[in-house]
Length: 180
Ligand code: CUA
Image (cartoon, rainbow, N blue to C red; front, side, top):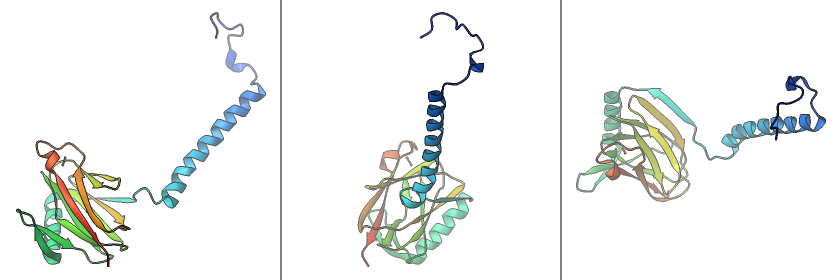
């Protein structure tokens, strides 16, 4: 610790000690290793989602989801008669967020790959798949497309994890993954 001014005031012109250079180099190389690990792990870790995002008009998105749901509906659930929509294996599946629901309920097959489309009709919502740890922000005017391959059968919940008003805590959806 220096309580007094350094003797050589232009300290940055002093020669570097060998150890100092070595440590700076180690830190620099380690920074590069960490940086490229992010890219490598994205590809090999199969942990991060590869998202695509497109501009979309909320009304257009709503009519597309409604048409798709009407065409592929297999049954209805609950008091409100929310449709359960069975997606074509390998195809597109749609879900929309609005105050305060995820619509419709999806039925997917285990081991099949789908392109899941997500958008909001009003405010910012957060798609959080339970009990797995998949989280996506769902914005109005943007259509997110995520490629997913469910590897486990069962019933999954979708909760909203972006505060969206008085009904936020009730904004829950459902995805079934069935064995085929
Ligand atoms: Cu939607 Cu919170």
